[in-house]
Amino acid sequence: MTAAALALDRLRVTFDGFVALNDVSLNVASGESFGLVGESGSGKSTLLRAVAGLAPVAGGTIVVNGKPLGRKRDKAFYRQVQMVFQDPYGSLHPRQTVDRLLLEPLAIHGFEDTEKRILRALDEVGLGSGFRFRYSHQLSGGQRQRIAIARALILEPSILLLDEPTSALDASVQAEVLNLLEQIRADRKLTFIMVSHDLAVITHMCDRLMVMQNGEEVERLTASDLVARRVTKDYTRNLLVASEGFKRSA
Amino acid sequence: MSETMQTRREWLLTERPASRLQARLGRAYLTWRRFTANKLAVVGLLIILALCLVAALADVLAPHSPYIGDLANSRLLFPDANHWLGTDGQGRDILSRLIYGSRLTLQVVVLVAIIAAPIGLLVGTVAGYAGGWVDAVLMRITDIFLAFPKLVLALAFVAALGPGIGNAIIAIAITSWPPYARIARAETLTVRNSDYIAAVQLMGASPTRIVLRHIMPLCVSSLIVRVTLDMAGIILTAAGLGFLGLGAQPPLPEWGAMIAAGRLFILDQWWVAAAPGFAILIVSLGFNLLGDGLRDALDPRGGSQ
Image 1 (cartoon, rainbow over the protein chains, first blue to last red):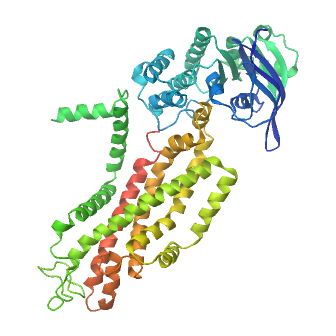
Image 2: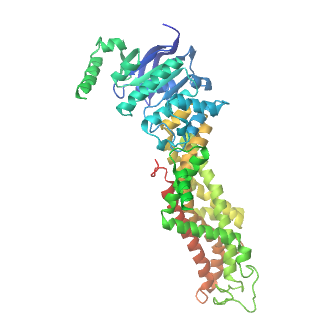
């Protein structure tokens, strides 16, 4: 394995005594795309939020690009790790234009060439400069998610945390956004950690994946294992059956 | 002409604004359209604009001096052609005093709003965003202030500071910020855990930056509405202090103090107290109508979302 972009060692997250994440360890290599699957409440989103510093870490260590993280994240951390949220309707400030949204991270980190970077970021996610001064309510769900991706990428992170980035979008837009993400990863050699309950999305996007339940690891698979049904745990088998049932009826 | 109007409207309402200014103007225009759809709100706005105009042009508009009356010949005159609203116990023209008094009213309202609203906004957003013991301490202080009736607390402050219009303003401001803090905190609690605030945290923004630039703008509109609706109450409190002799001191033509002076003759010369009372009523009504209209126009959960 090449140098780990992200290494978790027995990470533990509790909310008022409730154990949301129980001693989960994980290694994601640089440039890899890693998937997390599981039902609602299995702790997969909590894992991402804990890495991002949005959930209280009760124990264990997080190492990003060889640097262990402390309790408080510093600015350099946010240059390396960014996140795309699940709900594009809730992740954009309702009173800010796209321009303000994209300017904010540049202003916080003291970038000089903001004009150029904003235009490039919009271009990269396939939205022209015509979208620059719109408010989020003037955008469709897919466009919003593209803006959210542009905002995450504008700081040029090396690791992107994706929290069900397409589950709030309808099928055709889903494919567009997934292709966009795939292309960006290839262009920028990004490391993805992607949460989804959609096994098809995960097998399409990720090389390796971890199945989670009740805040614990169930098993680890490669995408080809999943396609070939080489699973050992009943829980994973049930997930597979559930997703197939969905396919047949569709 | 109508064609340029049409294109100007299109420019404002375009889905693809080309600059920051155009986006902002378009948004303001939409708010304005929502506001003007409410006719009563426009009436309220006109009343307030008229008040501002009267205050600004008091020197031109007032037919007589507000301070000097003819004690020998014109005491307590019934309204006539020379004194449209009659004269008071000192022979002064009531209309002129009302016109000059509008300056005091406006001064009270504006200063109280400028002092109280930012304090409330700051206390509320900081408490709501920080949570924990900061929240507990700030909100208990707010509760203590809220527990007193406004006028009684203002009375106590004026008694301590000494009577006068300046001290009355400070006293009213001190007593009127707690509700704003409550509103701002409630508003902050609804947005602090939202994804867009999390996204800003993830950019590495400091808490100060998040509160000032991302949370406060969301609280401002409900606060503006509340402050506007409170203006009537502020005017009445100021008038109440004036009436009790703790606000503006003679011979200042403060409306509340004028009513107090007219109380002596209220049975025989009713117009002396009625005129300022009516002025207070109209201005309070104007602010209430304006506030109602603003609530519809500025509601962050309204149509545009």
